[in-house]
Image (tube, rainbow, N blue to C red):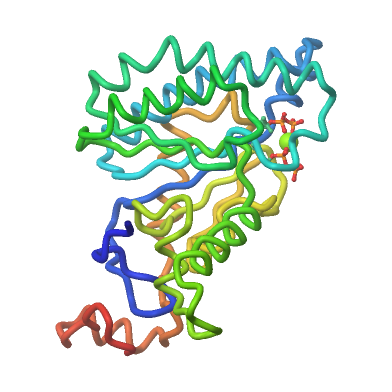
Length: 265
Ligand code: IPE
Ligand code: IPE
Ligand code: MG
């Protein structure tokens, strides 16, 4: 079930901190990174895994609580079969190799997405990695695999309706959010997309409602701790108004009582 301490950005005003509590990343540009070096696209994916390691470490050091990485979208099945199969193998190999290390570092590992299209072996590995790390209280690392924001919203709607066949048309935002694949974390504060494209590509559609968006031309394999710091620095410059005026925010920071969760300021 969803944790009720996660404030929905459209229903009330979440707390804002200097370090984003949740960072969500579209790791784009692997193929172009490899092409620039006259290597096959898949070499870029392999290097992308190295960048993942660095960013996980950097997030832990900076006190980020949730990191969500888009690894494979519902639309990525449209790619050439050999690239898709390389990505699946890479996911399996990385999981196999890294799970112990994630666990030792106190990381809670989760996968969001439609696992029904994956190999039974891969699904088993995912489930056991999730079970192994379920009690960890450090960084929550979520990997979005065969994930699509529309898929997520639809599966949530369907689950909600199956759960309450007697109800008609009176569901709330909170009830729907509780059925989303990522019902265990707050909404992203900071969204990062590498690789230069300026689009959401069907990532966390529901939860990105009030995320701060950051786009960089840096290709994913080149994205390191310094690049992450630049993204966080940009985030710190933002005024997160959540519908209010700038004047209201200044009053709040000057000592007026801040809006409490559940209160519509
Ligand atoms: C992102 O890199 C990784 C995945 C989608 C799996 P791309 O493979 O999309 O790289 P570009 O965009 O072609 O450079
Ligand atoms: C988005 O990247 C998905 C992932 C990074 C896994 P794509 O490279 O597939 O996005 P589009 O198709 O260019 O929008
Ligand atoms: Mg791409």
